[in-house]
Length: 287
Ligand code: GUN
Image (cartoon, rainbow, N blue to C red; front, top):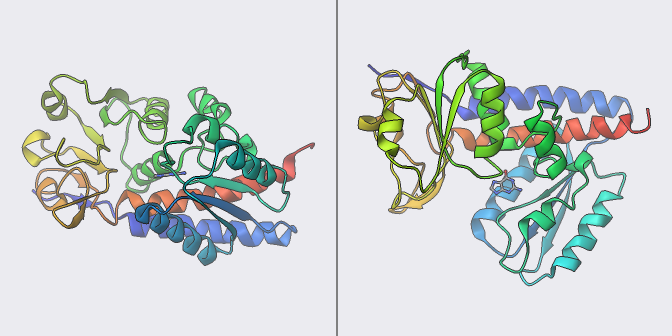
């Protein structure tokens, strides 16, 4: 058996088409959506991700403000820039690209962003709302994964879903989103015992380890007809890879994502969606 490819590029395009219409609508109401990005230091992968986010914004008519900051910037200097963007009415979304250089604290940084402009869904306010099923701004990669399930009509109710990640950006938001769809969710991490056995019994596996030296998901580790969503992207043997080899997994899975071209484009598309949500929220203040 060979399963169906979940093509992130196609699904992301359908999201972008909807965003483009929403941008036109907002502009007709005198709002020109704008995303501000902050990139600190010179990590080439982060620079590429931010560049792709800018290109995508341009495609749908969202304007951007680009802040490239020195790797040695202090926490208080960064806070000042975030505060300026928080009070700039022409900016609707703020994204600080992660990871940060060592001298900067991730929580201090992300929680400084106004919850109304928090297009990453990382502030305590928005993360808390998500846990209570009330969030308007949800982390982009998790909401992108949910969009993929939706696009293919993959029903989550009663399914055993194995999450191999517990980060604030991926595992934790996904846990809530999946639970809200009545899935039974197990969250695994580096200290989890018998990971292979857990993989074998899962209906759906969402994996985001990102280090092939530590973990590779193979077709022998999944059950026939499982759904595999590979969120990871890392360089291994001169190639960009996920936690699994798509060609191997798809022999046994009912649905699977390739890397690249799977979850990655969804993260960008959902960022655009969050930016127009934030732009809409800005008009509702005081109403
Ligand atoms: N680094 C890797 N993924 C992300 C993301 O979704 N948002 C931010 N801000 N940084 C990231």
